Each structure stands twice: as structure tokens, then as C-alpha cells.
Image (cartoon, rainbow, N blue to C red; front, top):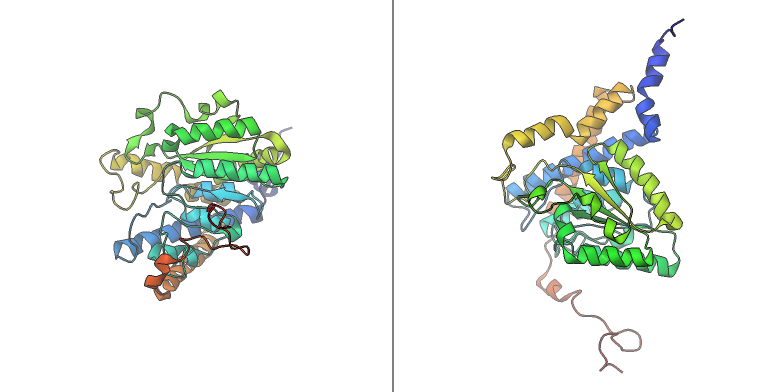
Length: 356
């Protein structure tokens, strides 16, 4: 006799999407709230740039929010994260107050770097977010050094290093992977493959897939749908456990797509991709819409609750902009702060042999 599908059975089946990823309803809602905040924060940053309140370069993470949410959510508070210049959302995910991130974009004293770093140099040592780096691939050797420090000190931590797809053609990337493999370091290299290095499609500069780049160094690699936050979370939860247990380094290709230009200096589509391509990705692979549909189907979320969550995200983003507006600009004397090393209690500078 065929099984009669009751309303309860249907509800249980719908929730299978959460169970198969090992995600609770509470966690799934947290991931949704996180991604909404990241989206609304970046939109507020975009608005602030357009009216001249943010200067310099500004690289938005709109469309790639699932990577920040799904990867960093699995980490311990004392794990380390380093990233490139598209790092606003990752900094917030690691625990930096959105107000401090926005104030840094505004170049104000209340920013993470006192207003002297700007969008590309978000930094929070207290939460172990070590940048925000403006040089392509510049963070990769540093992250490898952090991982060496973790192993040398016998700490139960891991280091996650985000980078863009263009980084895998940099020499420092390969040197770092070689050293990480030799020393079996607790580091996860995460390549956010949004298909373009600035305005150049990845397949125009590489004959091999990103996930193969670690194979010469005998580092296991994998590839995950970076637009599906549940898949991303599950993948990195398992991966982080392996690395923390002494499994050595890993390389992960996070397949994603940015919905804005490379930076605020180029149009959304530019001359290197069509408007139709961008709109198709927005329609088919928006990470917020994907999770929304999953949670609607699982009867975990409804439209009213989603609206309330979105309103909270908008309020936090607006509050961050208000805080940045009210924060003062640095005094001219601040130019000379954090430039010169201060002598220690013995009057010595470790790099200056003349101090005896």
C-alpha cells in the first residue's frame, strides 16, 4: 500500500534540505540575517560613495555574501582570517562592528584603522581579522606565516585566507602553497572565483581550473557552489575540522559571481561582460534568494518575517553610516602615528642594531 503523505510528512520532507547540510533552523535564519546585513551594508556603502562621502577605491561584495557567511560562521572566535580588498562583509562576519567598517570607508577616526586605511585596509586584530590587503596576493604569504605561528605555538586554531581568482597566477601564491605543504600548516586558501580578474575573464589567463593549482604541492583541493550558503557552510565545517585536527593545508575554489563592477570606478557590466549576463546571474544565483527559497520551502521562514529581518539589516547599515558621518576626521598629527616603531623597555628596536 502506498504511503499516505500527511501534512506533517510533507513538512518533514521539506526540512530535509537543512538536515542534509547539518544545519538547524536557528542557524539557517542566522545565515539569512547575516547575508541581508552584508547586502544592505554594501548598498549603503555604494550610496555613500556616489554622494562623495567615501573616497579612494571601493570594492563591493554584492552577490558574494554566501562566502563570507558560510565560511566564517564555522570558525572559532580565535581563528584567523585574512582577505584581499573586497573584504567589508568578511570583516563584519569575523566580528568587527559595522560602524567601524563604515567609518573606515569614510576616512574617519572611528574606523578600524583610524580612517587611514580606507576600504581596502579593514583590520581588526582583536577579532583576528588581519586585513584587508590592497596588493593582489599580498595576504597569501602573510596568512601562511600566521599558520606557521599557529603550528609553532601549538595552538588549536586555523587560518583562513580569502583571495580572488587572479591571485592564483601570482608567484607568492605558489611559494606559499609549497611552504604550507612542506610544513603541513593549518591554513585554508579560499579562492573566490567570480569569473573575472578585474575586467579579464579567468579562462583568458589560465588553461587549468583553479582547483588543480594545489595539486603540484600535494595539497587536497575542492570546489563548492559559493552561491549556496548551506552547501558552503557544510563544506567548510567538515574541512575546518580536518585542518584543525592536523590534516594540513587545503585549497578551496568558491564558485561565485559579483553583481557590481570590479570597483566603483567601472560600470556594473563594463565592456568585458554583458548586462544580460549579469542579470541572468542575479536571477539564477542570488545567494539571498537561494536561501530564501530553501527556507520558504522548509516552512522555516515566511515573507513577513523576512521583511522584518531585512528591516533590521537596513537599520544597522543606516546606523553605521550615521556613525561614520558623526565621527571626526583624523588630525594632521595622526599622519605620524603608527609609522615609527617605539623602543621597548630596554630602549631597543629589534631591527636597529644601533640601539644598545
